[in-house]
Image 1 (cartoon, rainbow, N blue to C red):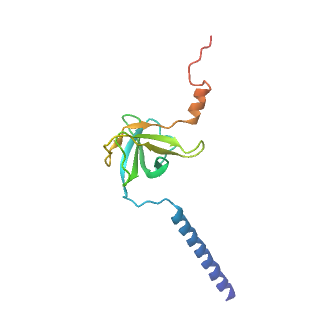
Image 2 (image 1 turned 90 degrees about the vertical axis):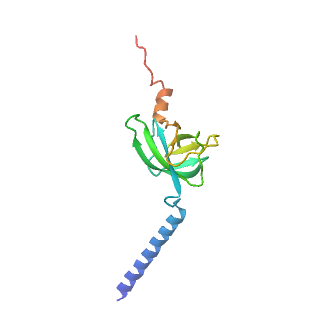
Length: 152
């Protein structure tokens, strides 16, 4: 009888701790309501480092997330669809670029707002884009490994 009471008490403690973890995760996660924003599209020559669920930021502040990535079979560009918060309006001459959070960290889409008075409507494309930079490519260019060599 005493062992059943101890098992019940341990089970209750485990449930309380699990509930505490869930409450903590829910309070610290940056969860947004589905449908609270609008979708935009951007095409990048290189989209290394970003993935579905990644951040979209303006001035370092998260304003959305990446919802879909696919290859445009005609241009061979990465077509990225992302959602932006409904209260954030993006000028139609804005630049969307893939930026690294750190040298070893994940990348995200940074939007540099333009100066236009016209705003992008849901489903429209950000026409000015800058793809990701590969650290390996930069090192090879710096080290001289990216050009033809003369060997006579």
